[in-house]
Image 1 (tube, rainbow, N blue to C red):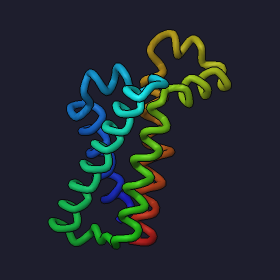
Image 2: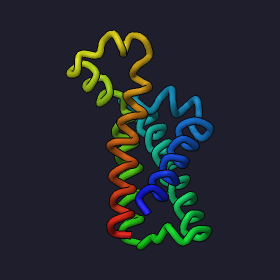
Image 3: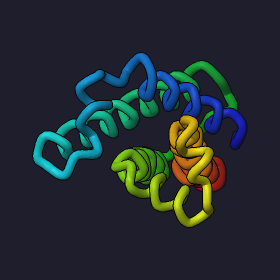
Length: 134
């Protein structure tokens, strides 16, 4: 079931981060203001909703995805919290500084590190939780 829920979460992530991501959210989500927090939280909520929808579709249409309410709520909460945290931008900046990636960052690398963080720190733990508890 791990592969099934991971693919569903990854598809939801891409849908939320690209076609579901407004210009306003992208522009403001890292700001230290009420507007920034609203943009960040609304973007994270998009991730939670799309993840819930795709997991639900997977559970209905396949015999491979079995969801329990508690694990699903925890996994969806983790998707939203981790996504919102990473999207504040300072965690990616801090990582790239600590790992001496200034050249990579100067050439657009932050977007790639951002996506890797979402997959490794957000989606994979959620998928593991759903696969082992769900």
